[in-house]
Image 1 (cartoon, rainbow, N blue to C red):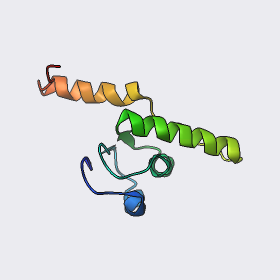
Image 2: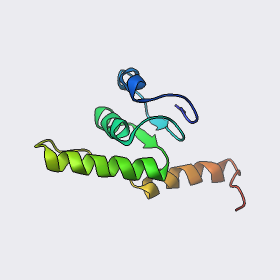
Image 3: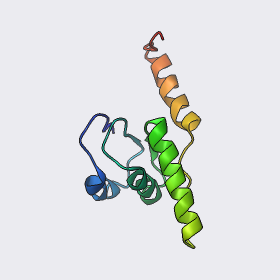
Length: 100
């Protein structure tokens, strides 16, 4: 599911958590906060999430801060490499890699 460039924000995340069968979710250029993204990843641990490196880094920092402030163990967000590699592979398969 691609939610790229939509107005989705943290208030709408509870609707996504009801979709436990989601395999992939793209969240580029949305209004979801790092904390909301981190919480979504915890709620849907079998789902692969794709988002901007800034969102991933901020969510990782948020998850780390929560895990040091509580006894709960946070699920660490995917790294930028884990996010970028599948996207690049899909672009290669579609022969749509842009020239930079």
